[in-house]
Length: 106
Image (cartoon, rainbow, N blue to C red; front, side):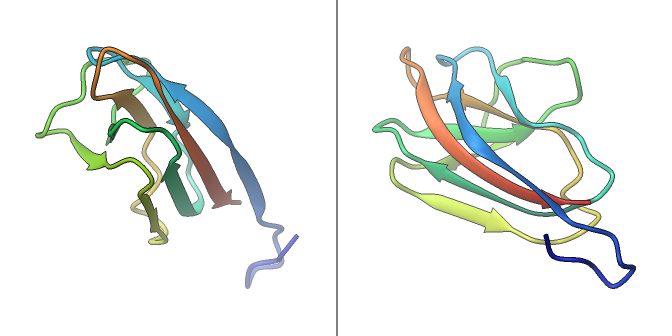
């Protein structure tokens, strides 16, 4: 594990999540107080919406509360202090879709 400037070990979390059909969402990443970076890769053939919803909400994601990740597309961000919200996902069709994720946090 890599250590930050304060000598604390950074942790990583990665895996796959099956995003439910359009109309409801599921948690991909929990809310954290110390997330350094996150990466998402849409490994399905369907577009996926990613957004920030407070726990325990599993509501619908729309153009006003989420962003779209096209099939095969990846996105990443690494802005400490801003990325601490809970991340949820939802397929844009009636079929579920899979997304891979990786995060680094303390």
